Amino acid sequence: MNALTVDGLSKSFSGETAVADVSLTLEGGEFFSLIGPSGCGKTTTLRMLGGLATPDTGTIRINGRDVTDLPARERATNMVFQDLVLFPHMTVAENIGYGLARSGITDPERTQKVTDALSLVGLKGFANRDPDSLSGGQQQRVALARALVNDPAVLLLDEPLASLDRSLREEVQAEFRRIQRNSGTTFLYVTHDQESAMSMSDRIGVMHDGRVIDQGSPRRLYNRPRTRFVADFLGDATILTGPVIERKAGAVVIETGAGKLTVGVRDEQPAVGEQVTVAIRPEAVSLGDGPITGEVIDTAYKGFYAEATVACGESELVVRRERQATATDGGDGADGPRFSVGETVRLRIERAVVVENGDS
Image 1 (tube, rainbow, N blue to C red):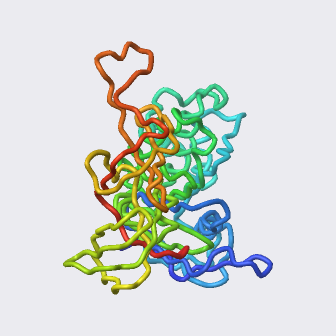
Image 2 (image 1 turned 45 degrees about the vertical axis):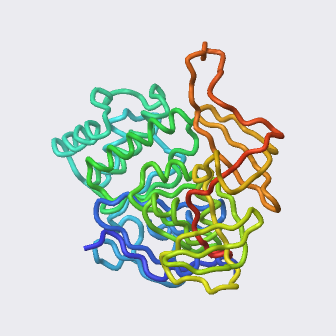
Image 3 (image 1 turned 135 degrees about the horizontal axis):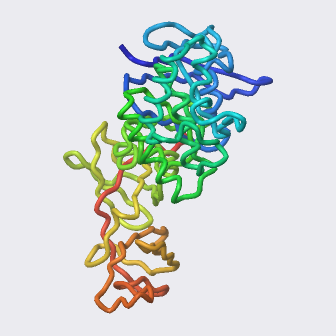
């Protein structure tokens, strides 16, 4: 049985559509992320799933039970918000056990459940601490323990890492993933942060203008996005357009502003003469003895790799070069061969994918 099934969910405010015909299925124990830009409808969707907003149309089932019209307290869900709302006048243990006490669960069962939750999130020995004495990452784990202690069928997370700095966010991401695996709870994580979603999720749904326009594994979405929007949103991508000039077995040849490209096609092949759009990741463009010649017009050093924008005919390609430290690197930041603005380079596109040109 699926942990969560959403069918045709829609919601409007003052005549403006916020969510349009969203359908999702989450398996038990799955980590699913719903991502998209601000205003795309992801938080409204989460609020409807948690019983904090009423859908105009559609159904929500948790473990097969229709909960569409049930209030939040009667659903087998719990939610972790960006604002953690830990009670400062309570200890860590009292914060975690608050929901249990409200449900009428008494000691010693409540104490045991809180102890187990603290162990799950790696905070043994923190039961009597005050929330204000904890680091940001520890507070995140307390909030997670408080949500998990009630054993929800689906845990809903609304941008809980957004306020953390990069290094702490990466640390907490690893903890969230470990905790999710150990608990076996289904997580639905809402964020605009593509990197955190890609690193933690089993599957991702991409929202745009109130709709889920693509969903799949992080690897599939990154390497084979179905739309131009998904290609742009999930990492850097060079977008080229042009007509198909030849069809081959499992591939088509496209005339683009950067030259002719042979692109593999898994689904239905475009017809000769049809205008198509191609997405190319920076790491799929290699330097060397390739068929495309261009001039470096911009560079960016990003620590463990460098990028260059290369003008090729009527188009521009983004090229990524991994950092290669040399024996002469004496700590001054020197590394291997660099891009230089104005230099002429030869490029080879190792991989590209045909995408739909529209937003959805």
